[in-house]
Length: 217
Image 1: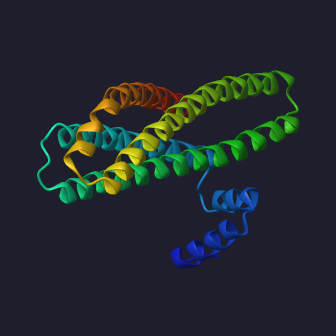
Image 2: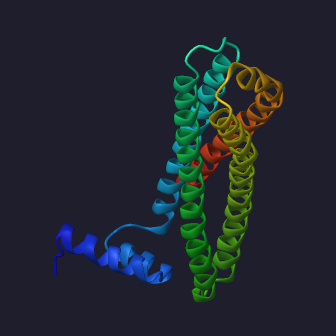
Image 3: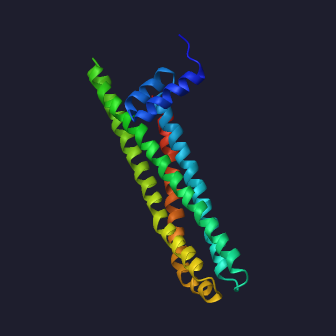
């Protein structure tokens, strides 16, 4: 029996909406979407989200510094610019967290299924080899997830500082307020430098994990 793409989309959406992850992934697998492939796809999307967030935070810092180092000028416009940068950064951060959650969801389904299927082996040697592969893949995944979470958590204090600066300027639209923001910029620069370093480490580790999944039978 053939299923139209529309029917498949509707079925998958209904299963996803119920929150039953195992049924959702098992249904996708019947249509040729293996959990391993979904994991690779989601890790890649998390990579992309982190790359975009890294670029957005670096760009926001550059624009924040440019605003605070200028004279008063049109303070309302400068506040609008800073507010827009903050909102873009906040949206990128939210997307990163969502992508990581999606990675974790499918990974747990994959590892749970793999562990259960070990019991189906009649060959002890093949079971042992599959267990070894599971353990190796799990360790690699745990490291990727740890780095992703660490990099994502770095965004929160940066966003808090951004938010404080934007709010302070909003409530004090004058040249003195603009000048006072400069005192927090050194801390902000350091925070973003650490954030970017963590994101780059996470992205590299994710790339290595994807390659290992693609080469592991």
